[in-house]
Length: 185
Figure 1 (cartoon, one colour):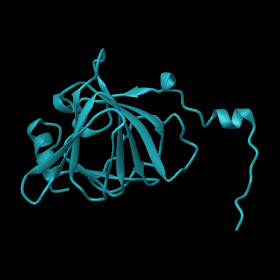
Figure 2 (cartoon, one colour):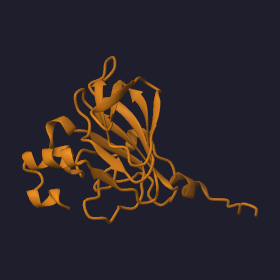
Figure 3 (cartoon, one colour):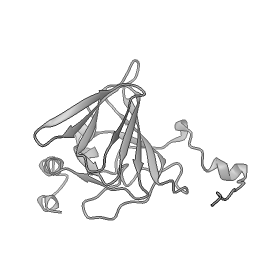
Figure 4 (cartoon, one colour):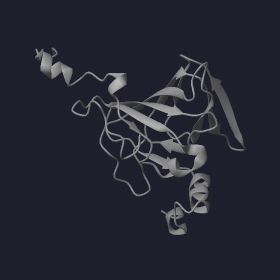
């Protein structure tokens, strides 16, 4: 079957352009972003629909506006900016999540049967996290002349969901962000 050819106008194609300098910075929208060690900023490029499951969150947060929201590509893409020492709590996704380091040095850590393992990524290094892996990432160093590192995150699916690990939920309870009843959700 042949691919249907379309011929969009310049204005129609302009809706599909996201200039980094115009991206809106969003530093809220996920529960852990209120924790000092999890402060980060999303610059959402290509969005997707929000998940609807109990205890599930959009991987880029529910408040990060996508520069390109009319295209359903089967994946979403956002930049993640964080100062050294900041990242995300352990979590998992129901789709593949990938990262490419743009600036700085980042650690990606994942759970094993006992303990954790980690890999350090430098600029232009790339990693793909399989479905269901409990993982977290953290900016280790922002890079020369920068105060925050920058990752490019690409997550598969049109409405992917993220779930915080049980230990992460406990950290949110201890910080007063979640109520104990949310641990059972």
